[in-house]
Structures are given as structure tokens and as C-alpha cells.
Image 1: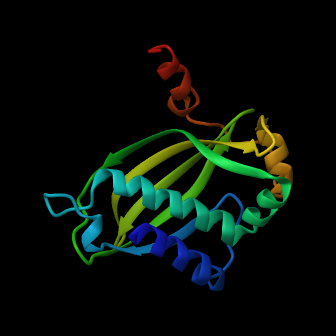
Image 2 (image 1 turned 180 degrees about the horizontal axis):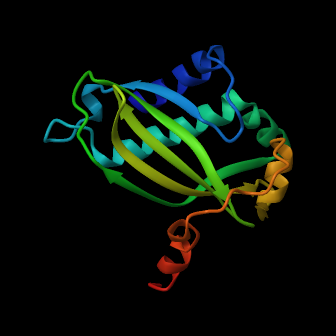
Image 3 (image 1 turned 120 degrees about the vertical axis):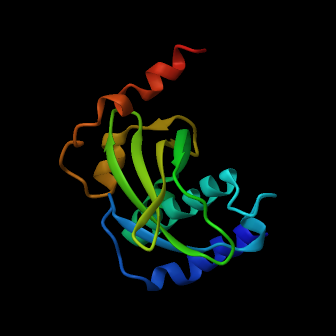
Length: 172
């Protein structure tokens, strides 16, 4: 229930916050609530990924991309995600998630989420996302970038990030 309330709060009040560029950065504020905690009284690792979902919604909404994507009949999906946890977040602590698009290839965009508290990095996550059409099929990133007003090519992806999906597909 808490996550629906957070989504509703974001949809209602996130629009009042300043706009951000399509590729970020976008800073999304949070506070740790009791139902974010696991039995060890720190934020559950799975809860982080849900908060990162909301941070991406915030980026899309505040950049104006969300309305354009909805009008085009598209929707985003996460293809891969990974996170490095450095410190724990505890009850009532305030923190922010900074979201930026680090680059893209033909099929996917790659985002970095930095979870920060008082200038200290709590964790860093990388997300590989794609956009799909409600009518079926995928949206190429070039088409997505045009919709978002991005005309320049992707910055070079770090080798590990560019090869991330390939390395995992070898396991299958």
C-alpha cells in the first residue's frame, strides 16, 4: 500500500517540482517508513528497486517524456538491473535517488541510480530498460530519443555495461 501512496504522491506533487532534462539528472526525495524495513530494521533490498521504479517515473514525468510516451502508445520495461549496496538506510532517514541516463544502444537505454543521504552514496544501481508498444513489438532507442528531443548520439558506454547483457545471455 505504501508504494501506491508514494506513486500517488509523486503523480500529484512531483509535477510541482522543477523540470529536469530528458536524460537527467533527476533527484527524487524519499523517507524510510516502517514497511520499507526488513527483519534487520534496515531497508529491504527489494524495496530499493521499487523506489528506483518510482524515481524513473519521476524522471519521465518531470522531463515531459511520460506524456509523449503514453500518447505514442508505448511503455517502459526493465530488462536487467543490478545494485551495489554500500550502507544501510534506517527508519525515518531521508535520502534522495539521483537518476541519469548514461547511454543507449539500438534496443536499450542504460540508467544509473545513485541513492544518496547527506552527500554520501548509499548504493548505486544500473538499469537496462526498453520501451514496448502496446500494440506489440519494441521501440528502437533512436525513435525514443527523437520523441524525447535528443539528437546527439549516445555517450560511449563503459565496456562492462555494454557487455553486461551479453555476459548474462551466455549463462542461459
